[in-house]
Image 1 (cartoon, chains in turn orange, yellow):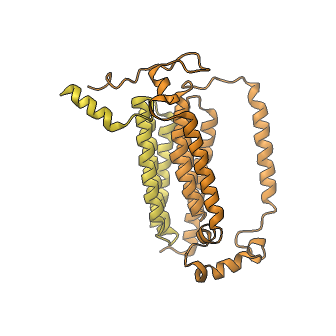
Image 2: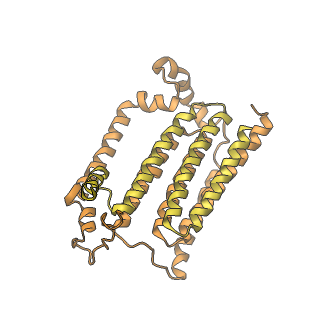
Image 3: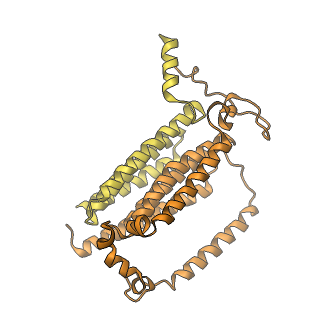
Length: 214
Length: 99
């Protein structure tokens, strides 16, 4: 397809562009005040980071990020916007200093921690000297699943994955039971303009379908 | 060649990102995010070929489905201010009233 050098330069460019887009989106999310734009930008952030996970060959993480980040959490954030106003309040000048310091300190610590990480593909790293290589060797004969990560998650640790799935399902079911379904749910009663307990004024009900059905 | 196409799509993503940032109306932003999702699908498909593993096309198809569902959800949010209104029922009622 392409030469080794050209391919490397191309992949480096792809990496740099994706990370630059992520950086710009993160700055914009921190700076913007319109909540809807922030929700849209967080969807873009998830899509770009999922693409980047595919670039660095973590396909399973990319799947999760795309399904949860871009699909589910956008919808959940929009639902949360039903319950609050459309723009964030402008915060005071000095109220930003504390969070900024915390973020900078965390970033410095994370960068410091990457110094100790073994290099990518280092044959002497713990990942490649421990039990991991044995799984890579016996995986195909054992399970017949071409992806090693999938074989570990779905076969070697199958019961663990089943338990995790049950926990996630129960959590989602509990949230749905708390918020309610259909006519008696929280969002529906706000849409109708009822007074909801713990909330002073009702949302404007300007979205009647009769008004804009021409 | 494929890598060049990938870079071009990434540049298009940057243009869409600018539209999302400065988009005057909400619908500009919805449209930009939808197109951004399409660009992501294309970029993933090309990435599979650049990295020599065309199996990534499956992931690209999954992304296309997620993109479609979230666009529908966003538009439904603007139309009805709720996700719990079935689209079919409202359409049937409106048709009955108009006709």
